[in-house]
Amino acid sequence: MSLGVLNNISAIYAQNNLNQTQASLQNTLTQLSSGSRINSGADDAAGLALADGLHANVAALTQSAQNASAGVGMLQTADGALAQVTNLLNRAVTLATEAANGTLNTSQVSSADQEYQNILTEIGNIGSTTNYNGNQVFSATAVNVFVSDGTSTGASTFAQTVGVLTTGSVGTTSGGGAGADLTTNATLDATTATSILTTLTDAVADVAYQRGTLGANINQLNAAANVANTQSVNLSSAENNIRATDYGQATSDMAKFQVLTQTGIAALSQANAVQQDVLKLLQ
Image (cartoon, rainbow, N blue to C red; front, side, top):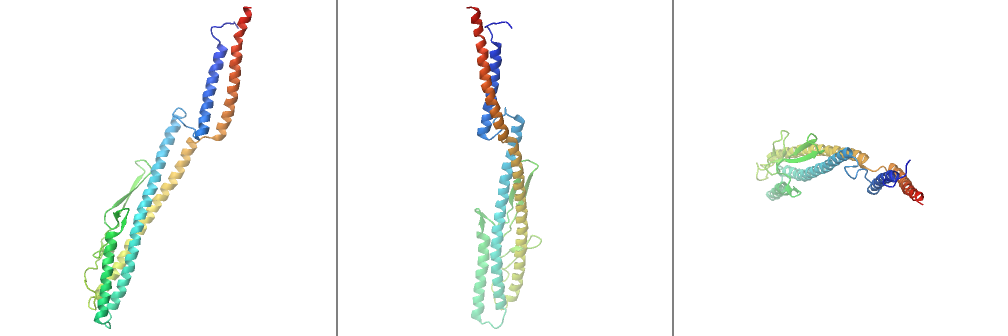
């Protein structure tokens, strides 16, 4: 091999290899410090695209589970209100049964009617004032609960309609129509008690049917939330497998690149030292 000073090929090779080792060591240290195997598109372009897509899916599923839970909260609020309506109706049944008895005097019947009127007023108040997150619950307006996995084909909308609650419509019938009308008899007395008792019995049945419908819808939304949570966990695991640093591999690589750095520096030093041999020829 001829001796020359214009180009130190050995040093160039050594420098090039040392630069590559330093870049690899820097990348490994970044993985170790960040916990992520992919810190830029250059690390793994396909893996980054897949991991980011999975992360978007997880975000949509997490929010969807919260959406479903919010829907459940609204329906449970309605169910709790209707439970109180049932209690009021049961008391009204007692009053109507009592008023139908011919042994009561006028004052006692009047007292029963006063309490009955208060019950009607309270049922109306429950229907008009029960709200969830500032929105009236018994509005007969469909509330759309959106559940999605972040894709156009994996989205579902659950329309939840509670229905109105007034003294003119208590509960809902099996066909989804208005419930019992408690306004047909304005006053509770010995004459109207039997008719009112029949209406109250219908109202209790209609409220029970409405609560059953709400319960079925609650179960549906809970199932949707559970599915979304399960999918979120599985996709998070898949994303983690793609994105997360393999610390066993990374620490092994770090040790390798540290040794290569040291040997590269030593090799570069030796390559530079060879140039000094040319001076010896000039002595």
